[in-house]
Image: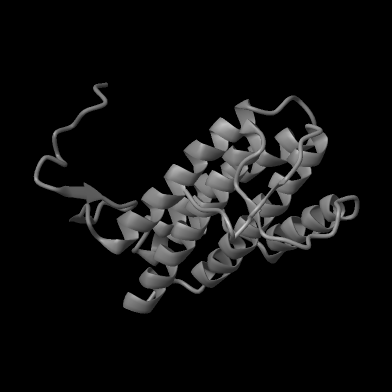
Length: 187
């Protein structure tokens, strides 16, 4: 089977269930942002060693892929066949953040997204996640969506926070220093 179908040459794409829409449609933009996040998450995963954090991030990748499939579905008759986000997924992110935060130095300054390669990658995931969240808000504002996307919005909001806390934890684990924002810097 060839990977290219040429069916998108006219600027349209198929959603789950077969509906064809413009590639600029906010629903396509939203699951595209989630796909981009998932790709950057893969890059982050490859920059850290084996262990619990890596295993947790790999689970998040699957959840993001599931979320993209739900967003790519307009026809609600297909939704029962798709895995759904659960409130426990959001609670898990909160628990992970609380656990990582226990041993971190209290923040007294804004920090910059640098200091270590894995830290910078976690911040990229955070910012792309925020973009995905903003596009999901736009989708929810522009059309009637399945109620499960409200849970998805909460998940993305929490996930971006998770990436921030993870960046701080990676700084600690890699014996690096956080780069503190200094407003008085000039060029």
